[in-house]
Length: 461
Length: 82
Image (cartoon, rainbow over all chains, first blue to last red; front, side, top):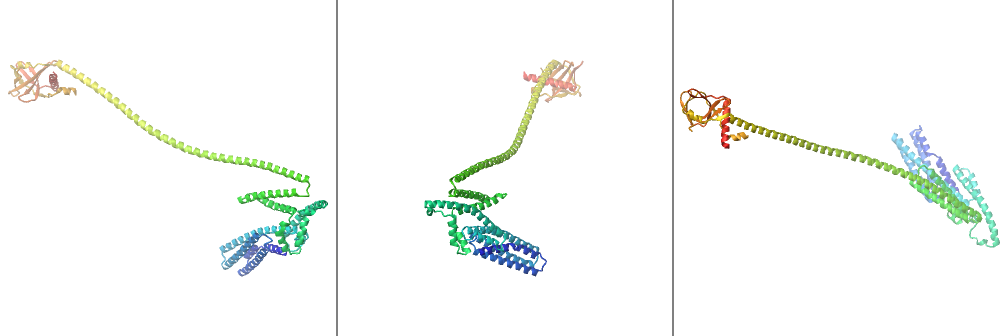
């Protein structure tokens, strides 16, 4: 017990020492560098000393807390000692050359160290819970009595955290004592009945008082440390159904605390969610075990057991209904969520399709316009060509017709002229015979005429 | 029929011409003589005018020349067609 006290006192003293505040005060003070150096080194030395003592105590009392926890605490303290050394080195740098970088560096080290202290504080708190648990089981197994606890609580030098822990243990024990008294009464009634039947010595289940007596007799002559160790190792073998019930109730309480703390968080990580589910399942199992223990209790009458069974069934039915309701709500929420997601997805797809369709339609329109333009140009050219052909054909036809008409007119005219010439001019070659005997004189200039070799051709042309 | 005629030119010299045709324009009441001179192939036309002593070969106008030229060619064509 003295070791535990010493451990807690050192921890609490260390925890209240506020080394980081002291360091900050020294660094920001107006003292000379030499004085600062001395003060800081002194703080460091004291802190290291306290930490070393704490580490030593943890290693020697590892059985009071779990081994894993002891190792973890030792490592943390080791890390903190290293941090102090680093801070020490940085302070030397600071004193050698004061720059904003070195001050910043020092501050960051101090901040890191402060984080370590907070972390250690949390771990120590867990140790405090373990301490409380050990005290509880020490009393339950007779290694300590309730009076010892009360005396311990009144001792000077204890911190509030220790007193709270002891109060909790005393309260828990008082509650259990009331229950135990009732049960002892029932057991003594049963014992008197058993005596009448003559089979009490064959009862395989020891009463709670028997367990306490045996434990007290076995451990009263040992020191506190040995007694606590004995409790730690042998507590399971001492427990009867009542102690098991108390233990289960205690475990349920601890698990419920963790469940409550997890549920109060705004957002759970995956690991925490899994832990929460696991804890709920554990609590359910423990409740089941508790229920079974209650059913096996001899002090309960058949009607009470039936009542408890009924209550359990009703509770289960309520749980099922609640679960169904929750599931329905959850399903409804899930359905709404899925519907909303589907709708959003469909809307997104529709928008994409519409955009795609718009692009395709635009391309199709362009393509159609190009095709139309091409066809239009082709048709236009064709129409132009046909029009030209028609005009040319018409023109040619007209020309041919005109030429034919002209030719006909020419022919007709030629015929007319020929006719006219035939009618007008008369060949009188025989006159030459008359002229043979007459005097012929050329008085004018003869005019040459051109006689064509083939005049019919010229006529046709 | 002898087509050869001896005519006097404006110098008083006799020249021999070969008469090819003598044509009368019934509208103008004029006669024309077509002839070649000597051995030449060229054909000439002159207006044939009868007077108290004989005949005179006078110069034709361009219209007259064209008319006679057309008649002569038509006549040759007619002969060809025949």
